[in-house]
Length: 328
Image (cartoon, rainbow, N blue to C red; front, top):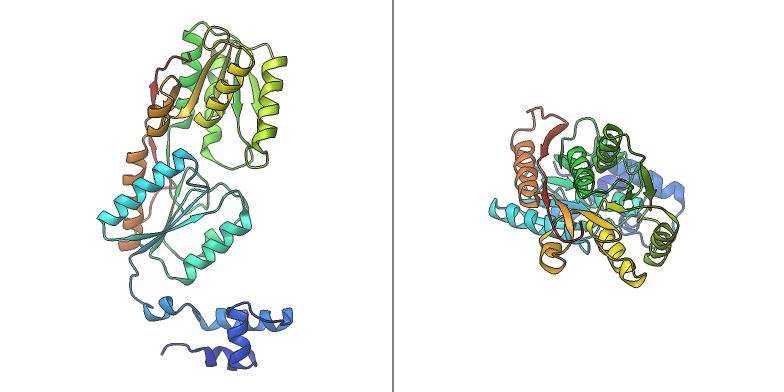
């Protein structure tokens, strides 16, 4: 029997109007009353969303996509491929841009759960969201550790970092710096740094690691920090762990009359179609975006249709490739 709003009201010892006000976050209510209503809803497994109630026990053919922002060309292209691939399989998508906001990601996750989406593909990098561990929905992750029982799809970031550094070395560079993002994001992309350091250790060269947390820094602050590095550090090359940062470095070098590649060799990471089309001079490590989309969708559908099947946490490390441009 379907649980009704009046059942929740009775369980919580409040009026149906109060339950409605809690659900819709309307009016002034005490925290004690709000907690009582939420506890009753959880105990009765009541889903306030009308779509969820009407489709209880059925597939919605909806998939939630949680990513940082589609304004970033890499995530924009990946989401585009995911949406197209899912549509071919009969699914529609709900896109959630979580930016760098943990509470926003948590709110979206709860919304997707309330709407009973069939599954979730998650690729944001916020930390400390325990709901992933007990949400009870099929989930696959892109390049991010979420839980021990959620498989991760990514590329061979370690080899990518190694290959980028090797490319600079083969171009005669010996003072090779790396410009990377936050190392606290619990992401396999940190392995790009490990690949960089491994190559330098093999060649008995000193590492020069510069960290800019793009989640916390404005573009102005990022620009100031890059200028400081270029002015004060003795480098002949720089490996940026994403293409947008590499393009920013390139533009700053133009302003500072630092010739690329004569004075400084530069390589990025991601290799999106956008960058290849609009900034083809950049040497970069390209990730297989179309292959990511195919595998993420395939694994998620497996989890939806055969939930009893056990999947490895690290399911795949897809190969990357070097695109040789004019900046190295």
